Length: 164
Image (cartoon, rainbow, N blue to C red):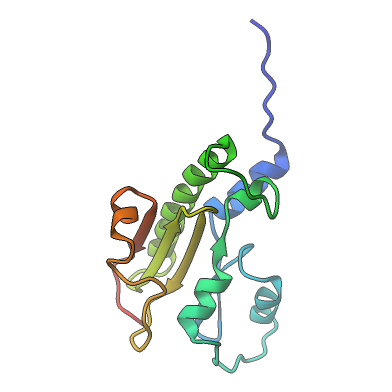
């Protein structure tokens, strides 16, 4: 039997591990995903300096923006392919796995706190998350895109827990 060499390189395993086994950090009352949110935010969280707690447009918006990932970028940053491309299907599957992994990680690391994790297929699959805040609307309302949600093209995963 001929030997089959895997195309999965160590750097691929490392990149997948970072997104499938997320580490979270807090800054200014917000929660961010390490290796997804900007390095500037991570360094600020480790600096020991206080953050003002002011976020634009609000905490939900800041978290949803910083905590978003396009699985296609794991193949090649900025990659856009047709939906018929095998990399697109792989990105769909990976995006759904990342969403469920982030959900599980949040439940474990922040028990009793409310978070929302989203997966949206669109023309470039995207995963994002934010904490649920009492005085702020969620990034995507329940009932948005009902046909896409019914077909699995949009997932909204809400952790059990209270709003901040």
